[in-house]
Image (cartoon, rainbow, N blue to C red; front, top):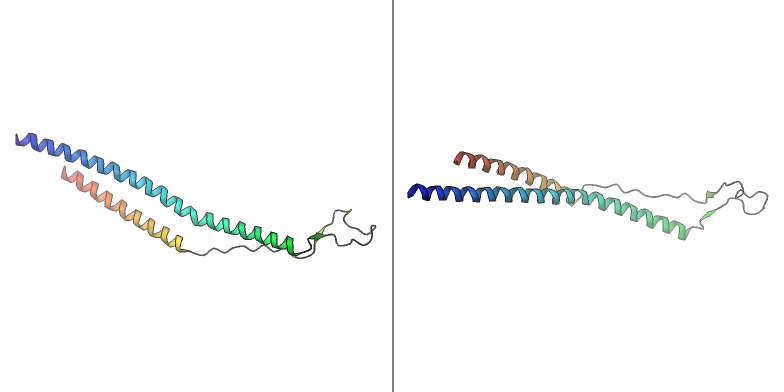
Amino acid sequence: MKTSQEDSTKTELETYRQLYLEELKVRKSLRNKLNRAKERLPESNTKLLEERQQHQTLLRTLSVSPGLEPPYCGHFENNLVLNGNLTPRGNLVIPTLNPRPSYDYWETSLWKTQRELEKRITRALEEAATKFE
């Protein structure tokens, strides 16, 4: 009777171990997806901010300056519009954003370190489980 109880306990233990390992895999997969999304987020935010700044700069430039005008509008004979030569009155400068490491960068770095640590712990648990058998 003792051996059947031990066998039952071992079977139950093995079932729980398998369920635990499956749960670890699912959690790891979800964590990896979340981390990849977090890694892409700062880059997307930077691009969005750059585009927004460029758009605002263009709007300010177009609303404040007289716009693109031909250089010679006085005499019809000298008008370069007919030649297709239009030049802007002022220099159009679109600033670029120089991204620097942000809080998100450091948070992502910590996530990577935590992920590596959890991989090592999982590997050690799996090795210990095989030794237990």
